[in-house]
Amino acid sequence: MSAESTPSAANRGLHRFAVVTAVATLGLIAMGGLVTSHGAGMAVPDWPTTYGYNMFLFPISLWKGGIFYEHSHRLYASFVGLLTAVLAVWLWLTEPRQWLRWAGVGALFLVALQGTLGGLRVTLFKDQIGIVHATLAQIFLLWISGIALVTSPWWLKFSSRPPMTAVSPGLTYRFAAVTGLIFVQLILGASMRHQHAGLAVPDFPLAYGKVWPATDPDSILRYNQTRLEVTAYNPITAPQVRLHMLHRVGAVCIYLAVAFCAWACCRQLGFRQPMTRLALAWFGIVNLQFLLGAATIWSLKAADVATAHVVTGALALLTGAGLVALALRGRAVEATFQSSARSDLNRDFSHQLPVEVAR
Image (cartoon, rainbow, N blue to C red; front, side, top):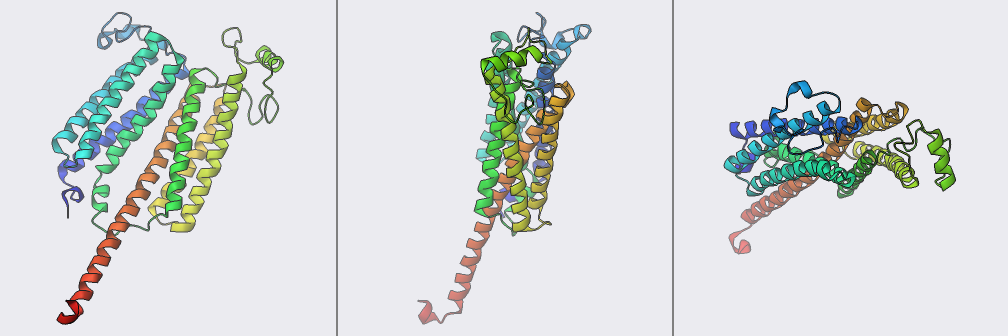
């Protein structure tokens, strides 16, 4: 049995800390969602200071309104950065797998880049940086969660025992394709949020009373005249309406694709397999995400509902990525066991032959 497949107390402690870091990262995404939902991204106009104060010494008495959300987000991001630094050092000092030690270094680089992008979003006041910042948050969550997965005792023991029923290559590819589609959908969602296009179409399931709204100049002018938002502050444009509708189409495609993956998993593996249960949970998360997307429109983009929509989207991405990782791991372990079984069979067969024939 290799060192990789022997979990120790140190490994379990490392795994638990990685899980804490992953959960904290998901919480950071939620806090970032609250900042955007409350329109508080520029509530603190300087960085890395906070209204001229050292960020960590900013008086609590001044944490009011949008400042509370933005400053809390900065402090919590610093906490996640500290957790990531500790995780990276812990991996480097104790982890025997070289690639995983470098994954810890990569996590440290990503969290530093993410913090820098958050600061540049403020100092340069560019929505495009905010979109990249939101996208990188999802990548960082996957990265940290991946570290948590591969340091788990279950993962380490997986290579030393016969695997559960392996997923077919076709279903593995579908898991990967749908997870990629969810990632693209999250980028579209981030683009909508940072362009303030979340209510570019204020009704659902129809769009301005139609299946697909008109986007000619006269129609856009009419929409702006009847919008529920203050059009003098944030009028919509035709590209924003199209972006919103593309996000809706993506949601329907993802819903159907995840439903198919869950059905295919049930059919191939049966209901009792852990992979099937995870696939069904994935479908449940996507159902919740779909409902929260509709509720975001019906509630006129209420901050708590919109933030829950963001967090559930991250969970959908994370679950899909987990299914891909488990499917690939299962297939790799199955291939190893089959190769070992063939070698044992050939060795036993050669031992049973007469000496002259064996020669």
